Image (cartoon, rainbow, N blue to C red; front, side):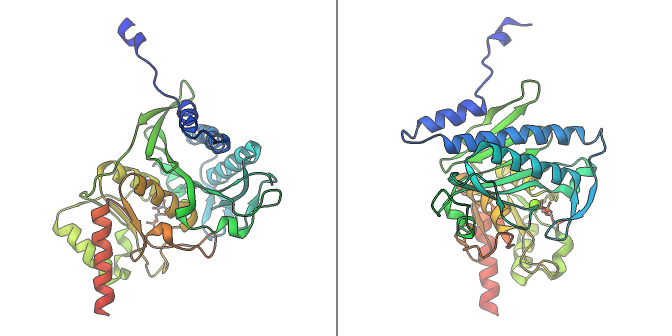
Length: 336
Ligand code: AHM
Ligand code: MG
């Protein structure tokens, strides 16, 4: 091998990066760092299961329906177990909200200072056809005193209270992207070393873009404001790109510039996506990258949650495009 290549540094691992960031806060106790490392560990295990799923019989429907009445996939169940186990063993988290569990999950770590909301495997209907899927997570500091189980109040905080949020995309490579409110950084998994390496430092999203992502199959029931905004996108000859895996659609638009929207439809009058573990974490990331996220009327992160599985419409991505969508919706309201 060329000796120049051998001299190249391997780069910064996720663990080292988390440790360095912790050193920026002299009074940090390391609990949040540990929590992020727990999530990264579970991610590696889930990544392995996903990669193997084409080879062994764990893809496909599990035969159960989750709380939202959707078919649960075997990998959904596996991912849910892996993340819960990692967070329970880590000890920093008292309570978990998971897309796959109706009730709050009490970890038994009553001294844990944090609450996590997680969609362990998003876009799972894409598993069987080898399309990218993801994990989305959000971290809050509990508001109730430690020493007891976490409460509903700990779990129903607005997105502005998030202390960390991230997503994992299991795609042509596996990436973990997260923020603790001080910019956004992306790490790519190197499977032969079993490590995530910093590959996308300080991600910023373009202020505008030429991609719009929406399920147009529902366009008959879009409001006139949404329809007007989409007409504008088409008039400008934007590219329509829709994978149907939120993390993958979001990740592409974050890097390239664009807007993802899931508005209210006849089938999903409140939108389809879940506030606590789909919209809020991505809203935190997009804002940290310079973008914007809204329910059409107000900033996603300012919505006061009423229920841990609640849904909301979402318009997320490049700031200018989200503002344009909001203006189109406001014009619709004024016409009414
Ligand atoms: P899931 O959490 O059950 O996987 O559903 C969420 C997914 C998102 O990943 C994706 O953006 C959206 O549902 C697609 O919905 P639709 O098929 O209605 O376009
Ligand atoms: Mg989901």
